[in-house]
Amino acid sequence: DAGVTQSPTHLIKTRGQQVTLRCSPKSGHDTVSWYQQALGQGPQFIFQYYEEEERQRGNFPDRFSGHQFPNYSSELNVNALLLGDSALYLCASTLKAGAEQYFGPGTRLTVT
Amino acid sequence: SQQGEEDPQALSIQEGENATMNCSYKTSINNLQWYRQNSGRGLVHLILIRSNEREKHSGRLRVTLDTSKKSSSLLITASRAADTASYFCATDLSNTGNQFYFGTGTSLTVIP
Image 1 (cartoon, chains in turn cyan, green):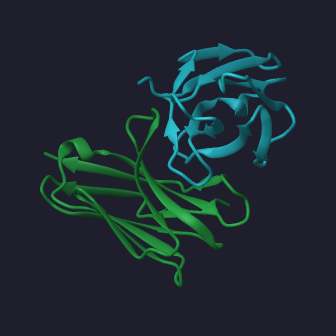
Image 2 (cartoon, rainbow over the protein chains, first blue to last red):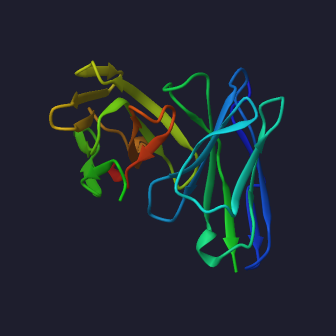
Image 3 (cartoon, each protein chain N blue to C red):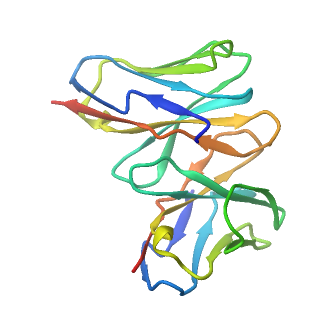
């Protein structure tokens, strides 16, 4: 049973560019959440997708957007990258609201 | 500021000793979860305790929850070098569904 997978593992982008990160949830999970984790900090909730719609959103600007596909996989898009967007981006899936989350290994994004 | 805050920020102990870390939060919760993170990679779920529970055990882990004080503690007994990691508490706020807030974490080092 495959766990949560994310791609790519590492990514280097230039300020102003756009990036797309991908996530496949654990088998049987239909809810995907995205987190941003800066160095030395805890994960910060970006948003959550359920039934192909954004269900919850944290305190992140509109430059951060997402999508969920019918197979429950998800994408995180960040436009107009800033140096401060450099972080580890984590995807987590869950079976039902309030249950434990299963995290992927993350994508390390570096903006230069 | 973050909903959950762990204390201490860093903890260093000898193998075989017990490690205790604490988490405080600000608003009412549905449940509280503890996660472990090794070397800045994905988080691993350790234990979930619901707001109507006071104590929960899982192997060498013991979690307590005091909703009147808005605090939780994680005790790791008979620590091992492999327990070296960062530990985070995450709170599921009562009125926001499946949106988790993570603290800044406790960095635990277990010296062999």
